[in-house]
Image (tube, rainbow, N blue to C red; front, side, top):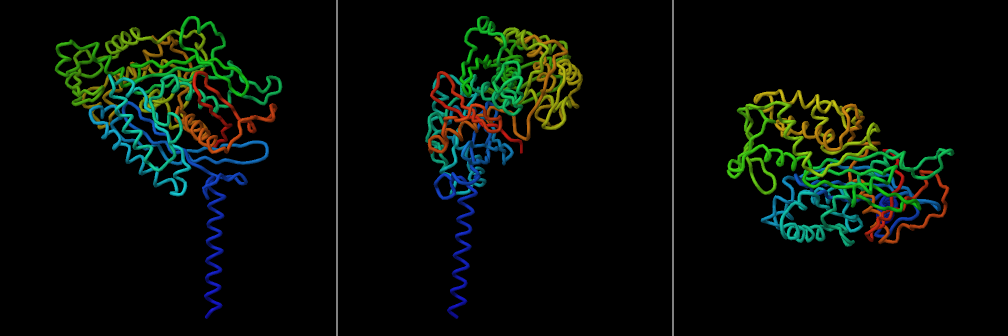
Length: 477
């Protein structure tokens, strides 16, 4: 009897060692110490606290070690999970704002193995919704939210893990995510040289709920003299890049809705929380629409048409700070976020890969949407009643704000190489690498200046901040 028992114990011991070894090699911190000998995997959590909702982005990345370089192979393993409303809706109850995060944190805890929690960096960035709050309301919310995030079990002990993200950071993160995915910054073409160049990069246009961002690398720096304060100097892998970037607060899609509605409504009527618009058909009413801590009833009018809706949208756009950008005319520009969502809803693109259209097609889609009657727009979709106004505003923003022609080529994308185009993707790399720098996992010096794109470590230093971000070449899933 002794021998069978001994055999059973021996087999159990080997099984246990096998599990421990597998865990140690598979996960970068499987035994609590960074695995520097094998390809390993780790997680990064980014929480996007937007104006209309709070979204969880959970990334699993693969880190490959060799004597010459590290490669990050990133893929989102969980479709972004969202809770509504946004944090700004809890201005009178900051504790409730913190409570609203719990479903997101619970989902992250479910996906990330328990032994990896304290080695999984987490960051929460609030955007335009909190930036629009008056007084100390945003600070009060962030205080409670930060406490909840720090007690989540994940790693949040680094500077600015929870804060309101400057609008220009949204634009810059999005621009880098886009251009790295498109591989426009570096090339292996011998005649060009392995050096970033402005003419190969593409412009990024992001449309959020409260604000819209524009970021591009100008070929002609005269634009900085015309528009003071839109400059962002960056040292990127030994090369200087001067980006043109700006966030237009109040020009996000949801904020624009309210501004356009208010421009068409008399003050006396507005004081009763009633708004009227020619972008909705007569006889249709949206009740209890909530934005900016208030609830509104939105009413259609007899003047409903694309022409009248466009006139008021144009009036709002021309009253904003959106500027004419001559250099971008005629060259393909990349649009995402609400730009993509509304194009998808209208059938301008199919699927997450998107496609290229011309600006006039937004106008054509808006004209169709503005012809629908009350019964046609009351189909249960949250976006359908707003389609006339949303598409009209997007068209006017690009046509009358940036002054693009109707034949301007536009590329609409949600994903490239299987990865989402958003500032969250760029921030995930920054957060992961800031964490691994803290852990002493990654050396920031680069030995070989002539390495190929796949081999390079992109060392990115933002001027004006203490944040060192490491961007890696991304390999498609």
